[in-house]
Length: 455
Ligand SMILES: [Zn+2]
Ligand SMILES: [Zn+2]
Image (cartoon, rainbow, N blue to C red; front, side, top):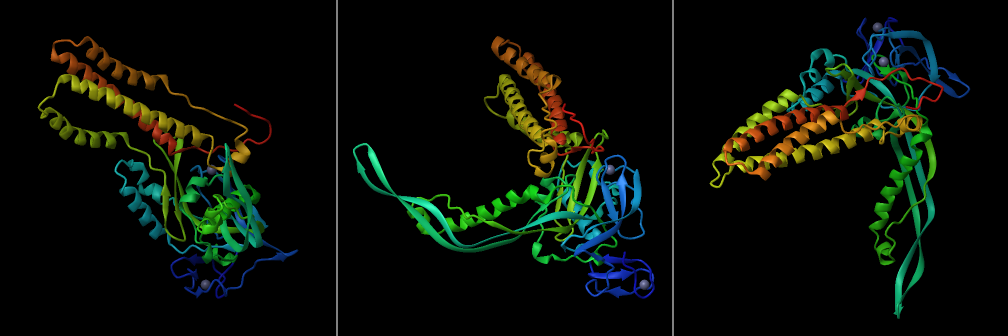
């Protein structure tokens, strides 16, 4: 850990001034000029920090100053145990925090206040205070191709009877392409959908310098860097393919998917700055995550829906619709039944879509870092809940029954519609519960290692 060269007190990196600041004597230092105590052993630099691990979920956070880690950023637990100083391989690069916590929190507040149905607990000051600046481990990939690159093409020659003759061509291109700095996070607890939403500008990465660490935390990678190698390569290939397609020679010879083969030039590890918080939901069984890019200030957060805010909004919207319907010249009570049936079907379709999303998310369809380790272990599938479906059936069958029997008295139509709409509303509550599960995660538990625990 670096100390103030003037007085020996603790120093902290300040993203605003881009200086390392000593709270005790007030001195400021340029982090690039300040001496570091990084050790070089066998050509390998090491990064020293105090490691704190969580007894609840097993996450480890590194601290680089005297402050203790009192709660876990990933599961919210207060059971953090200090391990000794640990030295691990230092990363190659670092993007220093350039946004302060206050700037980022302001961005977060702005983002969630634009969301009409945001539950109060997402905005609570207690939660917002828990945003923590963490340097997250990222894999950085470099690809290149220099020289000849060939693609197959063909061109119409002639037709003879039932046969069409084409000539085959080989299209040569002299390619000089490099892709530097395609990056993926290497932490299984930092879900890919969040890291994809807050991209970093790799051009601002600097050679690793531990003077950027004090005042912040860091996590160490638990996903192998090769996990994302092919994904990163695909980005390079897709991009160059798009570029190739612009050239008329490829369309002229019907080569619709020109490819470039890339070689891996290098792969490195970087620490990228993220403000991170986990927020427990009301039933204390799930958590939502909010992340802010410490370089750009961009926010990505789970957005659960507050059922009561939603209902109030719906009622406010429903009143004018009701009067509009009523003022229609050919309004018949049976129209309300038809409306009820349509509403039920729409709600049911939304429910099916949300359930599908939930199943995809629960099985980590989009998260390679996770799927590599977990996907073979457990495949859970949530089926439609009978208690949910029955509400939908009641509302739709009531209206159907009334339409088919076509009673004379109006109150059969109104009565069945009102009961039907109450059941739809109830079904909507289930729907919002399902939706909220799609934007939350189970509380991480200590990874059970060893043994096959297929469910
Ligand atoms: Zn000092
Ligand atoms: Zn934890």
